Amino acid sequence: KAYVNRTSVPYSSGHWREGGNYSYYKYTSNGLISYAQPEAGEYNLLVFSDTEDQGISYDVEVKANNPTILDFNDGTDTASLLDEQIKFYQVEIPDNIPGWKLTIKETNGNATLRIAKNGLPGGSGTRVLSSSSFTTILTAPYLSPGTWYLEVKGDGLTDYTISSEKISPER
Image 1 (cartoon, rainbow, N blue to C red):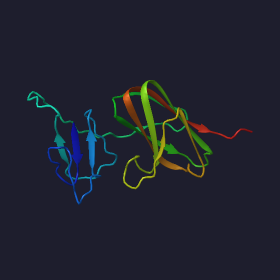
Image 2: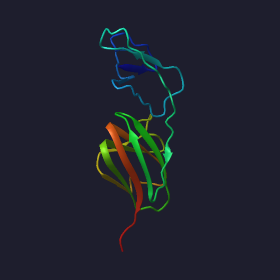
Image 3: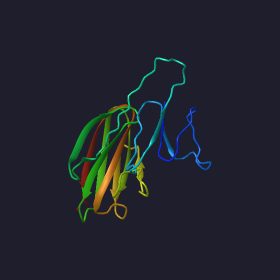
Image 4: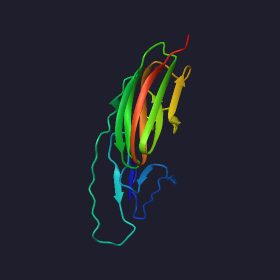
């Protein structure tokens, strides 16, 4: 198990307090911890086991998870995620678009989608729309031109294809 915290050092039971508040840490039991738009600075990491096995070891890898550019109209991407792993996408929405359709087709596992404008979902102060539907449609007034970000998170080993397309009014 692992815990990460930016503002205080955890103690060995895997919990820590800062002013009586437990909300500043990220926890994992599978080895993956993701931060959307992390603040610069030092972070504290506690790795521990529920057993007394002395042969336990671990490796720590820190990497940037930069968004993949996804075309607004007819954009697609196929990917595989581990349990709790996240992949980000960036989509530019042009002016005068009546609607946007996002589709996720899973061939294995389950994917959840979170959508935000002008910042990664989960980032500080970012309004987020969450969806676990096969198809998600956004329209005005919620949908507006600009830079939008998508977060796809795997639940179990997840293989998926995401697609993005413009919705036009029928005439």
